[in-house]
Amino acid sequence: MKKETGMKLLLLLASLGLLLYLFFNLDFNTRTTSLNQAWETTAEMNQIKDERQERAETIELDIFFNEQQLIFDKQSQTYFYPIIGESENAANPKVSSQAHNGNDYRILFEGEGITKETVEQNRQHKILVYGDEWYQEFNLVVTTLPIFSIDLDDPFINKGIGDQDKDAMVTLYDTDSQATPSQRKIVSKAQVRYRGASSRIFPQKQIRVSLKIMSLGRNIRNNHLSLLNMREDDDWILYAPYNDPEKMRNTLSNNLWYDTMADNNRFAIKNGTQGRFVEVFINGDYWGIYTLMHPIDAKQLELEENEDPRKTDYYYRMISNHPIDYTQFDGSVKDNVILPVELRFPEENTDHKAKWDPGIRHSVLMRQFSEESQAYLYEQTDIGNQIDYWLFLTLTRAVDNYRKNRNYIAKYDGEQHVVLESPWDLDLTWGHNWSGEEELRAIFVDQVSQYTMFYPSFISSNVDQNNQEIIRMVVERYTELRQGGWSDEAMAQRLDEMIADIYGSGAIERNHDRWERSAYTGNPEPFKDYVLQRLQGMDQFIYEQIGGSE
Image 1: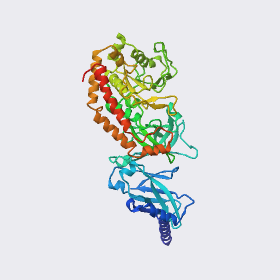
Image 2: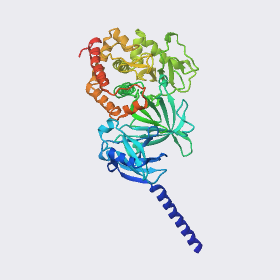
Image 3: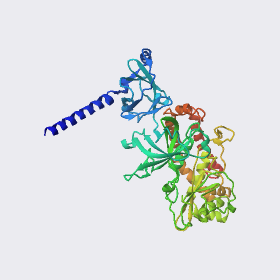
Image 4: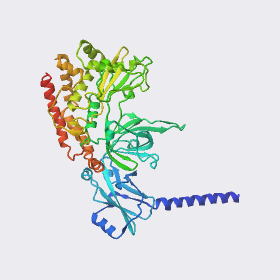
């Protein structure tokens, strides 16, 4: 009995010892206050520094606002606070800090508070951490944009993302005040790699992110999550607008198509993609403005594979301007890429020439006006989708989508393939034009009033032939759009929201500091005016030049 009592006493003492250890080694160097109580003037902070020496060894400090750990950019020694909404609690968060290599310190912030103006101006607040004899300075940035952080599993070996998949942990901090606690911070395993073709010449790379999760059986499987209120998926793209001065063109165009046109087809599928702006960190380094978006894939398009290749759904993408004589095209049964065509579905190579037939027939008939092409237009395309695609590319001046960056989705309806089209890679839009002589491979061409027929297109050839039925359908659809998502008011609101994201968050300046040679402008208003003027010119083009009437 005495032995048992002694053991209990030893266990009690050990537990007390552990508690004391945790108290003195973890809690003792934790500081908690409110941000409003931690603001100080520059003069007061300078006085503190004058009385101390700058610390030689960097203090390792975790800072939390409202119990959310701030992201730390090692290169600039800057903490990032993704602020949620405009509430008093967001502007005056509870501040706590945890030092890993010091336990006698205080922390102050330079300034008078967080305001809309300080965020928009990218005003960086100094953070002063100090003890009795030393001090160290950091910076604080407040952003209204979500933050997407990528940390490679072994950053000492994996010094950067490459062309092959690398294991990582990704964390998304959502700044939407309507987001639930579980949506506000999402953490997942992932595999990441660079993606893109011509964009690889730029230092700010495009990134593919595949979300992963470990099952109870220790197997890695895909992790389907909804990010930033977009669709639930495991496959995501981080698009970098390096050569775009306002950082908006690709996202504006994709979202415009997605919101106003993508599901206007006989299958009612969302034939497009959407995106949300984020600021990206890779291994603790700031990488600037990106758009988080999902690819257009077989899941979204509801594609099905059939044992008979003549009845399988197919998904093609035109990936280059490589010339090809479609009338002589005999394809290949061994590959899924024959320039300029890439077969994206089925993913497994189908050893049958029939896999090329729907896409090639569509391309051939699009380039002619004949009884066969007219029958095909009415029977094996969706005329509404064809009109939408033509109107969209005409309005946006998508100069890089005439021959390439076009998706053809061939869905088998039980009797024949019906082909839908959708756009992809829309950075060269809204006056942004290709320039092989420029470092950024693009130049702004201010030709607001330039409206020309978009070729190749079934709609253009029918307008050329004065097909009054098609012209009437074009005018009716355009009028419908102008009364809805393409109205001046709707477009102005869309642009204002995007300007608030990019410029109101201060991110445009941070991105420019990070990538000094990237395209940049500090004033988005000329771009907004350009887009709205394009709509005015489009009215004249449709109602007068095409032959309709207001």
